[in-house]
Length: 116
Length: 110
Image (cartoon, rainbow over all chains, first blue to last red; front, side):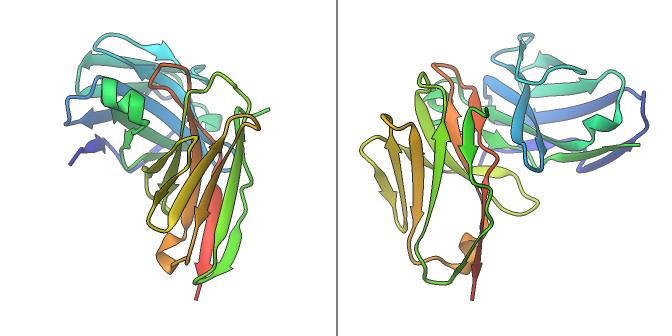
């Protein structure tokens, strides 16, 4: 079974803090994604990566950066957390070929981040 | 306008009912479509792909109408365990990037 794990289920940070969210997948997937999910807005793509050291902006990259130093790990960084970044953050991975064709992304359990 | 739009519901139906969800998409270049299911406080999981010819998986039937740019999901003989949020999803071009609708909530009651 594909497993995507995220470093924390719940996180509380203060405005201005630097926040790291870690995601690890164990299926050797090329593609990895970071989303945030908010009521009424659904899942919105923040950043994604097709390969190690490669990254592309999603729909809402402002205020975020990412790092992919190893294939299995994709980190989301909030350089200076703000209250409007309070949200559920979901990481996902997919196989480059079958994932593209089949539309299947495997999600982690999510990190609920609260910025005070 | 959102690229993928769904009626958020909630849809409250009795067990055994048939319920249908529709979803519209605005980008005619979207290549493929899918339905994901998300249980309360859980991550989304792929339910089924959607093909122009329509496809069925047990009690679930998905249909794509490219001319009208809408996707449907039909659930027959609803079970309590079908209670969840159903996400309509479009794949953008030839990339692995997915565009998610906000989801439609279904509550099946005894």
